Length: 263
Ligand code: ARG
Image (cartoon, rainbow, N blue to C red; front, side):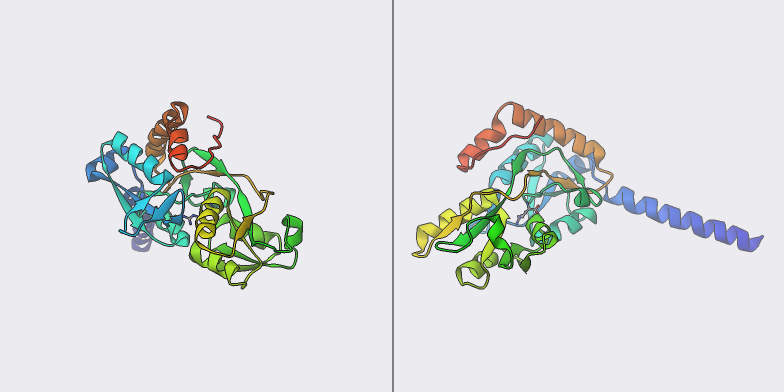
């Protein structure tokens, strides 16, 4: 009898511990407002969405959007910087409130985090050195390709059997291409456009973005499971910002073409 009671108590304690964990991690509008801040996790090597400035500040399309969301919630925006492959694990563990990193929604990621509705559509692009023999996706066969660790570009290239070299920072993937360590670099199209423009403006040697986009990927913001109510509130804000043209005007400010998802 005693053993039975002990066993029941043990099971109850485990159940309570789990319940405690999840309720401690989940975010609601009330917990955010009480804390007075919205803490975002970001990898600021992804212009024009998030880019680290010389003075240590981070600017970009997603930072502008997040500032508007924080303002609507009446809280301060706090930016935590990290490598891209730490963003989603940090959100999953409830360490930060929201993942903001040009994150593409995928079925696999949906098993680990809760996404808002997408606010834009993007694609993967192929970047090569000017004069490269690679002219299209078909020419990538057997070539060495640089990608950023933990990205959809990495998954896509690995799944397609390409010879992939992964780099923690996008700038290192770019350097690998210009120094000839790899033959091509696969990266999201708008970031490719921004980084290639900046590189070509200051270098003799030129980079070229190939015409054929590899995928279509919706970008959204990521939350820990259990934050459904907060995500619903933020979805309403995003919907309004899309409908009233605010998001399109933020893209315009950063000179990036905007592809709106269905709303
Ligand atoms: N959209 C791609 C993905 O979700 C790449 C995102 C990279 N973001 C960054 N801030 N470096 O995997």
